[in-house]
Image (tube, rainbow, N blue to C red):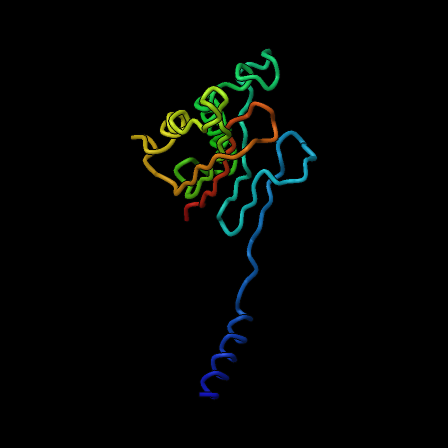
Length: 163
């Protein structure tokens, strides 16, 4: 028994010498932002896209208002559009997304409950369509709030570069 354990340990040590380091690429935030995160990090062909939030629906509306950001469906469409553009810059598409986490704030217009139906109306315009049938694994969770007042949606994705 001792001999087999020693041989196993020796094989692990010898095998460890043949392991190569992971190839890591960090993508900066757009526009020269100095905020201390990466837009995405790629490890051996897997892209971890940082959470994205919506662009304002109506920048002339009062900041933080529902009119400024839009409802959950509008915000979901905005976020997914931004994710699609970011992935495209990296040579990827929505069909390469394998995991999604959606953070949804309770909508005051819905009694503080997340608008899952509104989220799904936006989501199904990008996933499970005839043009893009690939479905990621996904979690959608209600959270207390996001960094910007009035934001209802933040989404992060993991995409895998096809070989």
